Image (tube, rainbow, N blue to C red; front, side, top):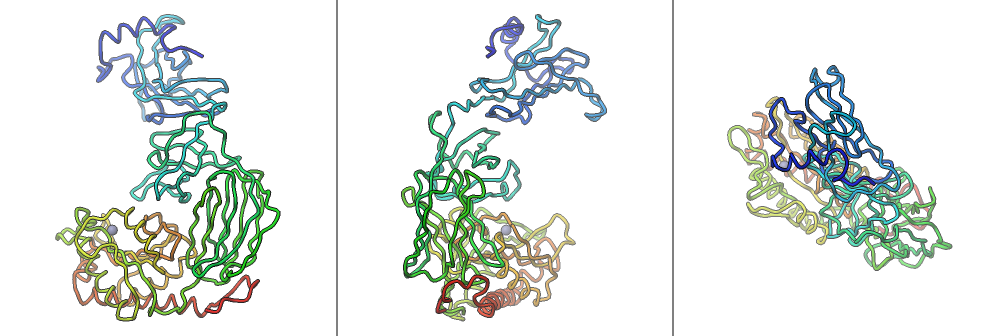
Length: 508
Ligand SMILES: [Zn+2]
């Protein structure tokens, strides 16, 4: 392995150190900027690409890292600019590098450097011989599909319990790359894991024999493992079933015991779609799923499946109700100064009365103009365990012409709730802005209960705004949302058990 402080750059490093600072550099500098691409700290493993870019004087001989040549790009590729160089190095097995900046040099010849600079960012090469592991921490750990970011965060792969062992094979900026199985990976934000000292064993386990059971509240499936492995769940429809993949697990499940008290689960089975992915399939008796949770008890993975409420009417139902924003988080503001946080609370309070009049118990995430983080709202609701959750927001667009109502859900199994509310709210005369799926919003994240986000109307549109601030219209909205929930409940009743009728249907 190349040491940093040897070779042709040494002399120039001394000169540059005496100069003190590299930037801002004059326009004529041999090196104006030199950075890794992307320009963030990185961990790379064998086969990964270290990419770099340098801006300097055209026509130079430029190298990076282990004196590797960089190529000057044709101006047509970089909007007519000259003096843009780039380079790639594919990390090889056996390469080592411990959180170091990358050296760039402009060479006079093979041995003499005219200028040198270091990247601001640091690079570490991971050795497959000393695996880097981490444990998930906190109640809201999650994996992302990739490095994408927007105002909702990256697209989420799924949530994980705490103390799940993750095998990290890379890092880009503030996310680690997680190897889940052969050809399967995800990314995890740094702030939801705790790094372990390098060198543990890559997490893997045989599965023990599983059990399916029920108590007075839930049906359960339990999978004994040797360690807390990462997993992913998908609640699918037509027929309704929950599919749970456990990564790093290989079947030694020689039976699945079915105990007493099972009411919602059909004939649970497993498959091994690849050598290191164990997949459980949990068929549900009812077309409408009412939620599920996955957690570890020790190193046994436990899947908890909710049954439909005893009665599919508002009377007796517990509904979580979330008035968006609040306190210092005002949400959207119209040109005339109407604030989302005020409107959402006004509508939610009216909706609360509507639901309570119909006999529902309502649990609010806020009842006054106070700041509550979305993460705390999710945690609190997961604890309170409502039958359904509704989140009330007000939409906004850069274009005043955009208007209408819209509803949002994340999981396809919860689409009927959002759709029923959408169709009812349209009866107020608001234009339709759509029912939107796969929506990556915190309050749509929990799998424990069906949930929907209602973006009532656009405060940025003068017509919609006039209605949103009118207490009579807020009342109409509340009534339509209540009616939407009732339509949803009726719909789930009408459909009844469908798909897998492998047990006696439950008595509700
Ligand atoms: Zn909002």
